[in-house]
Length: 261
Image (cartoon, rainbow, N blue to C red; front, side):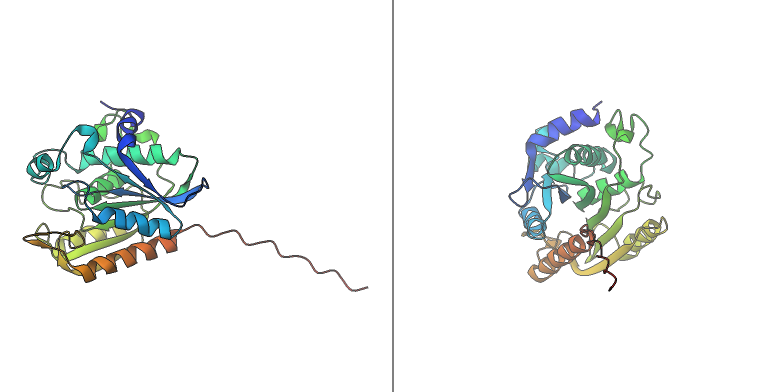
């Protein structure tokens, strides 16, 4: 069983870092792909983060395990292996590893997940993190205080997500995108789960996108279909969330006026 340190040591060589060309500690978004692995739309979100003055780290969960897309489609997307609780171990390890970077503001993190990646984030937010859970020996050793926000793009909340209604223990501001024609969940099911997230005190914004699951991924694999307009709107909403979550510079102290005399 991995420790957080062991898991990050495996993930880090396959994590792509985007951001301004400096070494300033900047707010950072951690991006977690869907069940099909890395796809062309994730760098677009990473570039949007860079343009907003953030860093972004795309975490590849498959390359360290030697999994190709074909295996992932056959085994992960069908629910046969690597459920969201195991993916949550990658989420926690990435938080721990990225937070230790000198060019990252560890108090200003955003977790972004697409489908299976969103499932992993939700498991990480709700797990009790006892030793041995989530496939990690020490999942409780990473603090979540620096996680200010979550971006959940059509997160998997279907029947195989057994813990989908488990209350969150860490409750960051959340933007959740629900696809109207998602073949993996109904809107009613997704909204019910998001209402549960709100009950922990999280500010949750929901956007019902009039598209299919994975509408922002440039592909057409029925029943999933790419929608350029919706994809652009998703990017805009992602950028707006980053803007809202960015730390504000401290106000300069006001000078006292000298008394006339």
